[in-house]
Length: 527
Ligand code: XMP
Image (cartoon, rainbow, N blue to C red; front, side, top):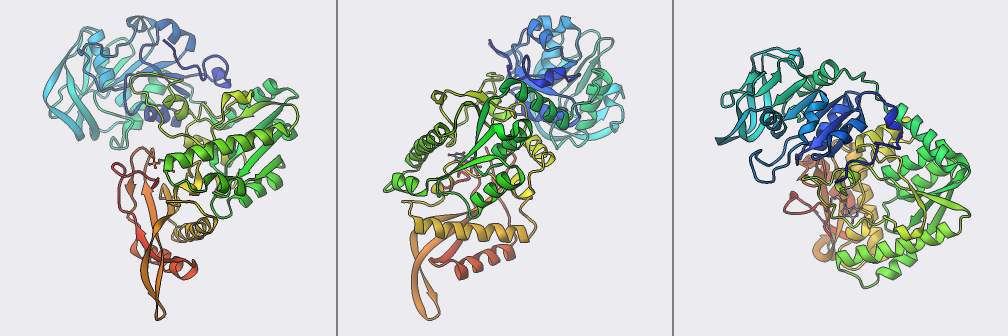
């Protein structure tokens, strides 16, 4: 069994007081719980559900949160905590399945209810105990359970109930053990933060002093110590993660940092210029731009199959990066923008029942055989924390708030064979849709917006003449996690302006469509 290695022994966060561990019993919300805790300025990590009491002790946490999970506590092989964890006398908050675990571990009884309770429910608070202090007597909460605690264990008292769930919250009379049958971490429980805050501050007595700024300073100190007089290289992609890594490392190391930007000819309009400008003028890094458009387009000639495009681009990228890295002397370290969700999803942190495999073949990922020591200064942070850190480091909003862009770039948005003239058409149209959404003040309100060039022509009429030109699609989605997404209900007048401008300004396009598919069953990208 392994537990989170990210921050237990060698990261700066260990000096931060008041950490809380989330034991992941397979909840889809484990990350959300961790984020909510950090929003209260308490550092939080997700660990496997079967972490031993001894390992918990080494983390020296102020409290534990048991997440929900899809199982029934009585299922064969259902995930259970090490019973010795209860002997540590740490505050524990069990959520949903987590509450049922706390109760059954203490001798309570859980039963399967005839009707699953799922969705918004009114809860009545029967005991305004510490974690319910400042919580309304009646409030909406989000329930999602089939089982429920029927009989509170000896020494526990019920704190709240709903129409169908008589014990919706419990606490031990003398020990710091709490359970909530509903989810305080989701937005559908509008007062949920009050409960988490009370648990963290009143029960766990966390000082609430976790700050991103302190995190950055600690990281800078650590990197300086680790790198000494060595040299670090960092790949820049135009994305926010690599930009924040580079900005942080520049602060730490100055001219000991070399950045590599591979211009593969598949980037968005103005992207290379924006990055080059930022990392040569503002952060005066030793920036190496590899002009590789021809190399990539040659390698992609005749390739139409999406996965093959990714493979070709991935290999070509590694070759280019390697060559550029070899031209820089005495490089020992490679910096990467790995984030906490990547660490969790790769299984390195939890590898528990909820761990999923990231299916994306991340172009831009570099193989171990490059032989560098890895530096991953963001591996404890969530995306929104990375953005905030980037702003604190002085990166411009244009980089920080850019919509995500896939590693294979425009290649997976230029359907069919990739040709320079088709990429140029796509790039121009893409720039127009972005300009128009920014003008409509909707850019920050949408998750991802882009154009897709289809490999088909359609008939049109321009002036008095027949045209037979490219059809293009606008794709815009709203999503929290990019695993599921809904198409954005963009106002018709915004769509109309995008369409009119594209057809008028981009030669070669005579038809614009709007993609109204959600994910699933579609995906966000077309390839
Ligand atoms: P899909 O199309 O799978 O996309 O719904 C989900 C998110 O992932 C991005 N994406 C990729 N990112 N390499 C990447 O780095 C890829 O091959 C890739 N394919 C999709 C996509 O832009 C969206 O944000």
